Length: 358
Ligand SMILES: NC(=O)c1ccc[n+]([C@@H]2O[C@H](COP(=O)([O-])OP(=O)(O)OC[C@H]3O[C@@H](n4cnc5c(N)ncnc54)[C@H](O)[C@@H]3O)[C@@H](O)[C@H]2O)c1
Image 1 (cartoon, rainbow, N blue to C red):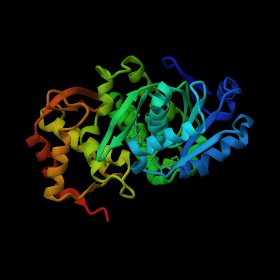
Image 2: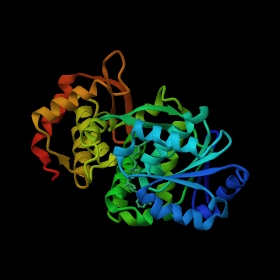
Image 3: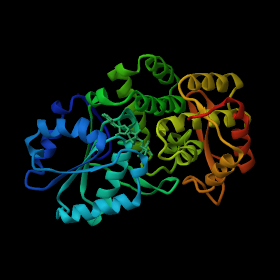
Image 4: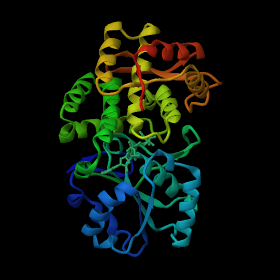
């Protein structure tokens, strides 16, 4: 079991049955427990948990449709009503069992319900394990705008068990690798190369790589929990990534990680154009990422729409678009202002490399 030092909550990597999860459940032996999952993770993971822990045999289970389209204020409101119907009180516990969609949303539901109840994250996707379940960002989308409504709020514990990856579809596994590549590109080029190597044999992810990826995320968010400085680097690839993801919201096969991978190609190009990144480094990143993640085709109107949406990015200040850029492979800086023309130019540059997603 790897116990990863984090501020104020338990973060454990390894078999959940050997973790401190059982001890945590005992703290709630006189309270109500609610398991929150989507239709896939309810089938693949919740049953396993209930069968292994007697304490969960009486738990209520709330299941929502899988996919990013469920990450809405409306569904959150429905769930608050269900919690209220179950008479869940302030001392009760919510356990989020799922990928980033479920842990983001479940964290938000728990944090606002009755001014906050305690929650545990059990991430079941690779992306959830190395990124979304750690660091206290919770929230939901607002229309096409990603994660516009939310709060920073921490679980009491996060249990990361790679066993759950066995049922994760390969496309979702690759989505998680995209965020791991990002962890490498912003801070550790050796990790970036190890992730690329591992992607050749994606299903058998090494425990060491998982641990190193988790530690990068955990170290950054522990040092800067409210994203005042260094944590902004984790947004590399997300300025363009979020508008691309928002544009394709709900379309099958279009994952968060894929959109971030395309965003990383675009933002690496921008880094080169702004004189920060060597052309050879940009080319290497472009080649590495295009091997796994294809650029979708956009019409001129689509591009205009996405560029307009950039004006509503959460990182913007005084109406100016702010972007993270690379100054080398493994070195990222933040708060770079970009103009609408520059953003438009990025989309146009990749026009000849686009493929039709249908
Ligand atoms: N809070 C953060 O810091 C942060 C960071 C990165 C991403 N995110 C958010 O995370 C979300 C993306 O996370 P995701 O890629 O995990 O998406 P997701 O939660 O939608 O999961 C992807 C798919 O995999 C399925 N799945 C998950 N675990 C499974 C398992 N063990 N077996 C079978 N199927 C399984 C889900 O049902 C879903 O269909 C986005 O909403 C993104 O905004 C948040």
